[in-house]
Length: 143
Image (cartoon, rainbow, N blue to C red; front, side, top):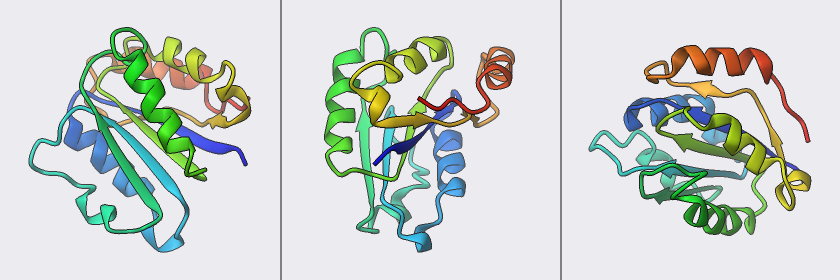
């Protein structure tokens, strides 16, 4: 089973999480995994979804997921993929290394497990221009 994977960018955690919450239909009972970069800021929009047995949430420390946080990202991703989710959302605090993260997710062993969708921007990313350019280049990436 291929997991549809969406990268969500934006500087503010609550805006990224609100964008993810808006994209999830809890009534659909679709197995969904969320990997969220950073700590909740007190307005945790996803708390109401956590009680659904088909939604798994993991938080990882803030930091570049393709550089300093790569090992943490790999371990968390492997743990989430054990549940074989139909959907995966990965929340990123910045789109600075978005292309490197997409490349990482398109290499083995992830190339046969994940299908990347369009990048979802929460609209407050310092690199919005770069994100918009990337979205035009990678509207739908299927591996």
